[in-house]
Image (cartoon, rainbow, N blue to C red; front, side):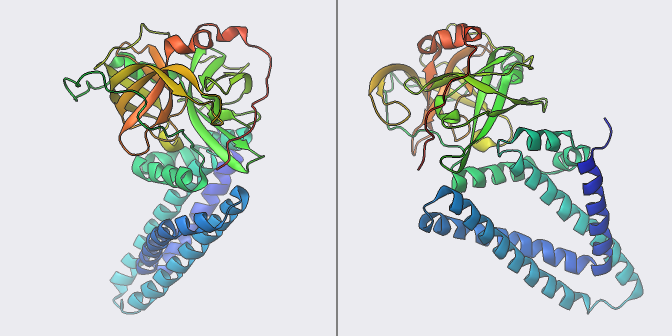
Amino acid sequence: MFLTWLDWVLLVVLVIVFINGIRQGLWVSAGRMLGFVLGTIAAFFLMPEVNRFVDSPMWRIVAMVVCAVVLVGIGMAIGVAVGRAVRLRVNAPIARRVDKVLGGIVNTAIASVLIALLAFSLSSMGMPQLTQTIKESRVIAFVTKLTPESGRTFVASLWTDFLDSGVIPELGPMLQSQGPVEDNAVRPPNDAVQQAGQATVRITGTAFECGQNQTGSGFAVEPQRVVTNAHVVAGVEGPTVEDLDGNVYRASVVYFDPETDLAILQIPDADLPTLEVGRGLSIDDDAYALGFPAGGPYRITTGKVQAEGPATLNNIYGQDPHLTGIYQLASDIREGNSGGPLVDDAGQVAGVIFAKAPDAQVGYAITAEEAGSVLTSAQSYTEPVSTGQCLAD
């Protein structure tokens, strides 16, 4: 693959950053990095207050971006000032030369991490062309590999916590645990479970009516059909689907049911690996939730089945109570897991993740039996349908 126009721009930026780091030296670059970290921490603690006082989702995004930029900028300015004061004390010629070289390296490293984190955040906005451009960049791919996964997970968590992009229903205890769990230890994912991840996708989109980005997970049941939750795509036109190989697709919603909280996406030009429907799970069985918690890196979340049976649930708009067959799981389900598959140890679909408990590490999945034809006859849905209203705060 050749370098894209974005690669050339980023390479020029990194060269300029490296030269600037040589000019300023290690202490100034280190001071800038420390200021950036402290400014980010300050923004982390102040953003919830901004979130509390700004009601409009669109203005909330603007306010929080401004807050983050100002606090990080102040932190970096203070760090640079301290670094310059320290550098004035470095007088030996050899020490000066080492200071310059290390300054260039540190400055470039900081810029590379920022590029990786910014690219990751932008790719979560549900814009197919932007996401595709980012995924095609070899420079971004390289610096992303060097960026710790914990950093990307942290940025994803901030995104969902403050912008409500990874909304997942929170439910109290739905079912009484049906007998004690014999062994809390879950077997590590085997090859079949690992392979099932190839059919799992990240779904992003913008609900313009509510001024918010939404992100969740899904899985292919046909090469051109993806199942997810209705609340993931509610109010979204043309959601973006991204597979584990980095391929990006623009999808259309061909089935949307707010009562069962299920939806089917059609991707005409895709050839995705698919999952088969399994025989279901029993109490105390190991279960694996596949998806993108907080819209971040792909993860397999392990768990145990605590209970199974019908529970009274509202539709995604909090209305029309009805009985739905669900699994109650001892599992750390998070925002962004919505719509992802719950698979058994054979890598087959046992259910669709759709909710979590507010406090305890408990999650919920719609059983495959309840989902029925959505899983087994998805190919029969071909015409785009309305995705209803978005779910505002």
